[in-house]
Length: 455
Image 1 (tube, rainbow, N blue to C red):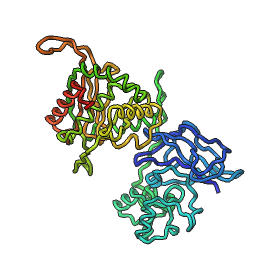
Image 2: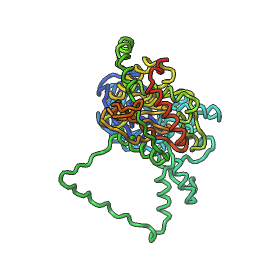
Image 3: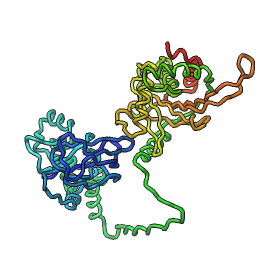
Image 4: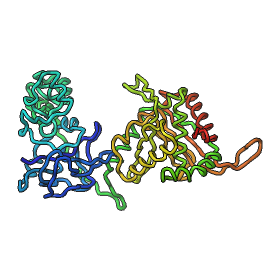
């Protein structure tokens, strides 16, 4: 029997994914573990592996298609097998299925193919089944085409009608008994629409409100075009709104004399190149200076996160440095993990690696998560100063501006020095102005005496 290939849910907030490229074509033989296709979800590219062997019978969604999670994108089966795509597409998939689809890309079997010897279930469901002493083969799964989830096991144990959390909430608010509702959701689960249907049927005819017909689409003025936001742009928008509306911030601006830093970089270019094959950049030197400053105990709140509904502070005794990378499609923040344990050469290699992956769309999810502090550099565009938005859940972000020859007073005399602007945006819930200023004073001192980076 043909196995459906679905758009996997790679994260809690993922609603849809974009198919970048199918690596196999219709009619190709597929072995378990083969790479089937590459997709992009939000900001992450992911290669999807086959969980079954057979022949790629049908590609339902081609390259470039944007597909909701858990929707069928293809089929694998026996050679010569015919797939009725229309019939398969007509089968409903509940909203709960989308919320609970496996984090791991999966090829899902129909529920009817489950047996006592092979039951499709998430690790959490298997653990719950062991703890509750439930036979998984007796549980009806509500995951993608029969995959058993943890709540399926708990529902089975409690012998309660299965329903999505939203359906339960609506039914509770309206005083409706779930036992009186006919389920139409995937796997016999009650969904929001089922509850609303009961409400509608019980509402007096005179109280029913006629829904006006949707207005016809307005004709666009000449010169106007409407395009859909890419998955990456949507993710950036959501992240920025969340950060902007969540954290009360302020920004500190400092001028850094780059004379010694420029001299140090000039001396380091050749030896670093010989050792790593890479050219050390100012971003590398600035990043390492930030890491060393963050590791001072007095600056621990600049390297922290708020957790548990902002009731606790998570202090980090390490630095995972996020480095913002701007692309035409949006903004990525790949992470140099364990930066506090790196020498300058190590940091150059690690930072160049993740930046290249970001630019070529090869970043893995793990390489974009876990940052404890972030930096963003707009200096190459001549930007002198700006107010960067914090990469949540970090407590701060450092903005790097352009280095400009500037008249300044040195030892009582006016001299022209290369001055770099730096902007530190801070979450005021965690860090006060005085502590932020102390951090910037120490960072400024280190950058203006950068030979200490090598000690």
